[in-house]
Image 1 (cartoon, rainbow, N blue to C red):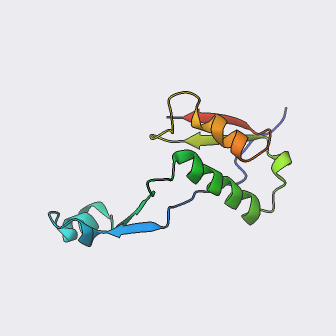
Image 2: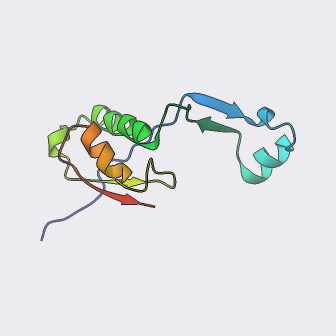
Length: 106
C-alpha cells in the first residue's frame, strides 16, 4: 500500500496591504483586539485567483527545491474562483505548465 501525505504547503499574499486605519467607521481596537485582524492583503484589479495560485505554486517549487514534474497532486481551495467553469484549478494547471493532478475545494 502506497503511503500518502502532505509534503509542502504554500500560499501567496498580494502585495497591497490595507490596515485598520483605512476603515474610519470601524473601531480599530475592536478589529485588532476582538477579531485579531490588523491588516488585509488585497488583490489588485488585474489579479485573479489563478494569478495568486500560480505565484504560490512557483514559491512552493522554489522554496522546497521540487521538480515540478515530480509533483503528484495539488489541492486548490478558494471561495472566489475566477469562473464557475472551467475550474480555477484547471487554469492553474495550464499556467504552471505541468501535468499535476489538481482538485479544487470550494
